[in-house]
Amino acid sequence: MNIALSVGLMLLLLVLAVPFWVSVGLGTILLLAMTHALPFTLVGEALFEAVNSFELIGIPLFILTGDVMVRSGLAHKLLDLAEATTGNLRSGLGTSTVLGCGFFACISGSDAADAAAIGRITLSRLEKRGYPMAYACALVASGACTGILIPPSIAYIIIGMSLGISSATLFTAAAVPGVIVLVAVMLTNVIVNNIHGYENSKQPFSFTRWVKAVYEAKFAILIPFIILGGIYAGLFTPTESAAVAVATALLVGLGEKAINVSDFPAMLGTSARVCGVILPIIAVAMLFSQALTVLDVPQSMVSGLTSFTSDKTTLIFMMLLIFIIAGMFMETTPNIVILAPLLYPVSQAIGMNQFHFCVFMITSLGLGFITPPMGLNLFVVSGLTGEPIMRIAKHALPFVLAMVLVSILIAFAPELSLWAIKR
Image (tube, rainbow, N blue to C red; front, side):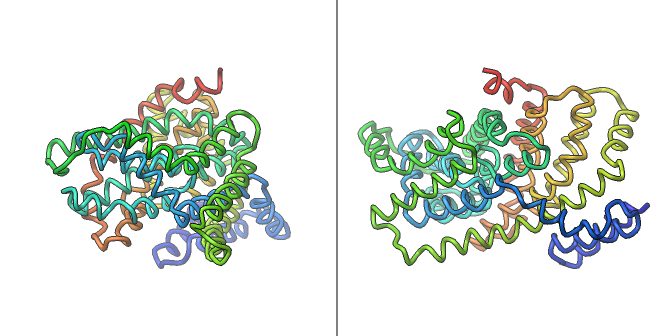
């Protein structure tokens, strides 16, 4: 009853448009007042410890790297390379747009940043090629879902911190599933385009053009190579790789005179604003999660679900449903911090590997970026174009279905997540 009242207060405040971190914070304070799960004298310390993590430094650094890439024009060169690679295919510009989202995902670690950066560059071009603007928005929003699925990913940093699991190992485990999602979005676009005949032109593949695009994008390619190569080779931690990537991107931008020192305050301000949203949510959500743990809620959830059914397949589908519904109504960060400690014991009870569980959870939550009412990516592309949210969401339905199928595949094929870390 105490937990129900606490959650009820959170939901009421959210309906009244109170900021998420304030809603969760007040609900947690109410829970602590009613249950005395943690002394109030420890609340300040608990909030500080929740964000006093070296790994969290990677969040503003990855965001800053993505901003530098956009401002310096390096992101445009990645898109030019993507179009030179796949532009000759039917649905070529749509396919290259999704591939460009994947390239940028290797840098920014954020869905919203991915959608905003790629959307600004490609949406008008997609419309000129014959795509309805609402569908073009849905395509970019869906492709940008790879922002948290392809390493490096802010989501994997947060879930690693929440569960005490190595983020670097999670990055390795997530690589193949992230690429599978990317390919699924590409194939869905090809199928939809063949049905409706949206794209009205294509160009022959030119090896000379491709080589030129690779050369032009050499510094842009260098950034994800440093990030992922350094992590997978064991040279850097994710946080260290983010710092090196920022330094490299700044040096390249300054060297090519694409940015100057006067741009630094605006870039730092962008990163600070995003962190100003994420970190308070992490702090209060971690406090709420600690209170639930003290009250034995995770253990009760394990007992409740396993008493309802002991069938592994049924429990996996129940977790998938929880992740999808939660993603529709809350951002990824609070979902991770609150749900991961609750459902991780359930995954352990059915013998699911810890890295496999994390990849399954993040992939499933990724659906929330293109499903109303939350649908952050939908709001980003709508803000860029003025297209109504629900019209974009309607065109995003095929991509939602594709991502659900991929989530099920990942859930029941653990080797997709584990083969790289077992090598």
